[in-house]
Image 1 (cartoon, rainbow, N blue to C red):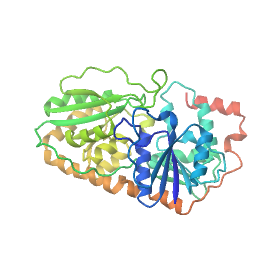
Image 2: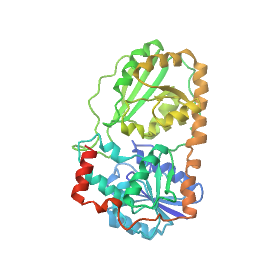
Image 3: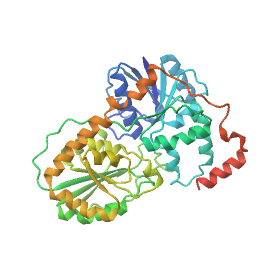
Length: 400
């Protein structure tokens, strides 16, 4: 069996800073090839870096770069796969409706919610989403909330959902990291957070009380920040904003290559921090950094509103806070017991092994590959009876 996986990210290279799409594709690929499915990873040639060789590939994986949509479809035809997995919904533009290979589309991050925090008109994009979704046969969501968010879009796109919806929950996945050799604990707690700077992730209100309480540990806070790896050198895109200088107990750091970041988490950190102000995008979110923290046995300090918080609490894999006012007392609880931390570290690894391991989470994709089915669609989207001008006006009001 063979799958072509097309995504907006090169194959994961530990020697470079990587995008979430690359991490997502890597673990989807691992899950497939370890069950005997050959994978052809396809990415836009424009994303490649000419100064680095391609990384070593797992057995059963080939990597190809394509120039445009026509080239992408030609490469898929030559591969003759059993199905195509589209790792970013925008790439559905390249596929015709009724495409002869089964199409799986990964919608792990609802892009329309991120767009609410950007200065652009979302009405055209919303209409385009409805049209593009009609080209897919199976949809992958990152958690149950994302699944619930997706279903109304499919109904509006014209899917006949009375007998069920082809939406599988495949969380951001990883595997427990091998325990790293660490020097004896010196009595200082190391907190870590950061990642790409996005306008929908606002952390200041939670980080401020955390920083104020660090001296009681004693503790340090490593904050990584930077721009999206594929953002243009200038102009649009998420760039790295100006940031304060590193201060006592707080170190601002640039984004590290993936392999270096893994080594840093394994050998130097104690607690992963996933705290941000609540908004609609955060309500449906699931972060790659949280999975990376947990896989290294770093208990998670996170918002109670996250869906992941239920697993953190159930596996005793960290600490939950409701608002910024809870942060100081929670840190004092952490500082009070290294034994509790060790228990929670084991809980973090167990959570990954039982709920986020790529070998488990890939099962819905394998089930579809064994018996692919196409959903039933109406002849046109349900909203197509509304004049396009009126529809766009309504959507523009909704997403303003």
